[in-house]
Length: 234
Image (cartoon, rainbow, N blue to C red):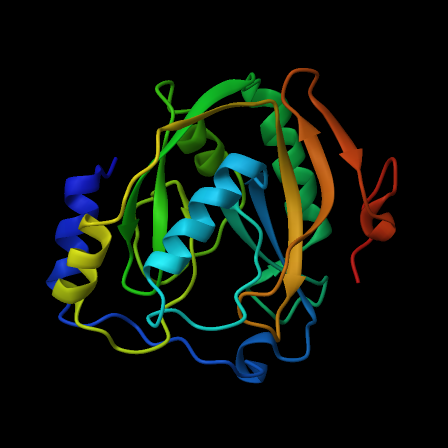
């Protein structure tokens, strides 16, 4: 389990940040419009204010137009498609397996703390901690494909994406002098299946369904998957 010392060490091992660019990503999505993930929605006032403050503090380093609302990714699921020729799809059977795993795990509501500003090579973020390791337990059971940057799961709330290859020592100093607010504590009682448009970088998230941790019930928010006994993906 990575702590902030390990995260910072890995960040500084590379001399430069990763440059993010605005493009269609057609070679990646292959015409599949929607990409799904399991996440926790933390889009509430205290977190929004912290993310906005960090964004302003890192002005000039981040890609314009990042509008993804604050969230904690639990599983990077895949493209919402049943086309069997792609290995990075999130199919009906994957969804069924995730729901079954959640029901079996019986993970109950838990507390999180959103704290220090840190960074991956591609993006700055706020580190998230929970004393009972429920976040790691959820990540372990939910269908997830590799994100390609770091093998170890680090719960976080992304601030934005770097717009160029900035020197990591310079960026690290900017992170270090950020005027940190108080630790944000929040009780988590649900997780969400979300999606975003695959052709947009940093585009907004749409919640498809919520899973109630207290009662073990999936509650649909969008008609895309709203089938009581079977799931139809398009």
